[in-house]
Every structure is written in C-alpha cells, then in structure tokens.
Image (spheres, rainbow, N blue to C red):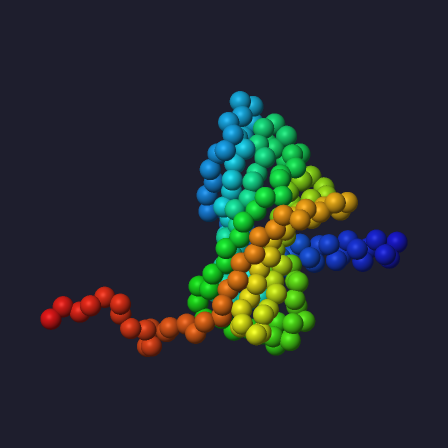
Length: 169
C-alpha cells in the first residue's frame, strides 16, 4: 500500500515540476473528413529552473476520430530549438551537474504509455546548456531524438548596450 502511495505522490510531483507549453501555431499535414486533421504543432516552454531560456518544440499530432478523442498515439518525431532570451544565472546544483538529465518538459503523446520528454544537461567545458528531446514508451522507446544547445553568453543591459542603427548628423 505504501509503495503505491509513494509512486502516486512521485508521479504527481513530477507532473507539476516540468514546464507547461504554450502553443505558438500549427500547420495541417493531412486532411481528415471526420475529426481534426493531422498536424505539426509548434509549442514554446520556459525552462522551469533557469530563467531566460525558452525552448520551441515542433511535433506531430495525430488527427482523425482517435486523435480528436485523445486515443491516438502520436509519432515520435519532434524537433527542438532553445534560445537565451535574457541574462542567465546557473544554480550550484546545475553547475555541479547534480541535475543532469532532469526532465524540464513532458507531454503525453498517447493515452497511457508514451511521452515526449525534454531533459537538460550542463556542459561546463563549453559553458552551455544542452536540451535533448526524445520519446519514451513503457515497453519500447524510440531512438528518434533532437538536441539544442544554448551557450551562456553575457547579456547586454540598457546601460551597456550600443545602438546598432547609425545616428543621423
């Protein structure tokens, strides 16, 4: 009994610690007479632990009747691109690589067993954050994956930035 309770608590906690995506847009790829069309969806999420890192994911979404009801299994195809959108401060936990492989985003891609995940790694030699997206399944995961690296760069503040536009004289 306690083992199941701990498992449920862990699952609920994991669901709340990963980021939630905002849909940016989508394009239809296959017309379906009944139910929604098959499409490619573009979503954005912010790293929940590192301020000013935003990742964009494009992924396939199955339509049709099963897709409309949430019963279809989406393919494992996904792409990711992450960018620095402001000054980044890395915690000691991340610098010490204690959170390498931590899930920063998770999306269910089938009714029960399949998930699209994004995990983060820190590369101290190159001072970069590396994001890996992949699909996993309880029985058989997919080797399809994509990667994006975010070099941690100094960020210009209004006091230090220089206007790129030439001034009129």
